[in-house]
Amino acid sequence: MAETIFSKIIRREIPADILYEDEQCLAFRDVSPQAPVHVLVIPKEPIESLATAPAGSAALLGHLLLKAAQVARQEKLEGWRTVINTGAEAGQTVFHLHVHVIGGRPLAWPPG
Ligand code: AMP
Image (cartoon, rainbow, N blue to C red; front, top):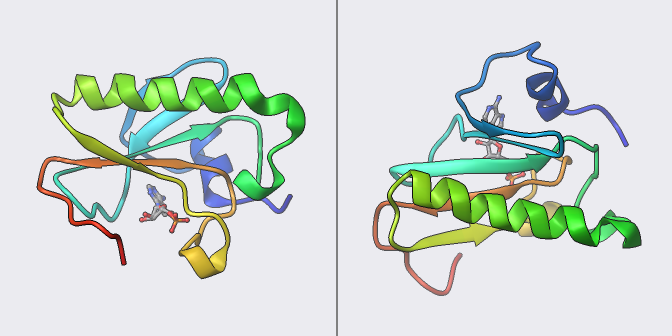
């Protein structure tokens, strides 16, 4: 897949407010937060989107969700929303898979 800004964050070539890191993933604050807490959890492996996630990535995808919940708890959220935008039509702008963790205010449903 084409290189994205998230690869540069993983390599520490551009700054980010990193909250969590392990061998498989990185969590950092969104630069344009849509709520008081807005964190992105990304795999270090360059997967473009959920649509192209390899069949063998089930454990990694589960890991991302569990770490999203861990970050939400660290941020003292009682409720939060996890969002994975897949494809430009759904609002994906960075083509490196990421889980948004959004919370800290009431969230409307359905989303726009
Ligand atoms: P999406 O629209 O689902 O692809 O989400 C991409 C997210 O990445 C947006 O919420 C952006 O604000 C965020 N973003 C883009 N560049 C950066 C950056 N350098 N650091 C942190 N977040 C970023």
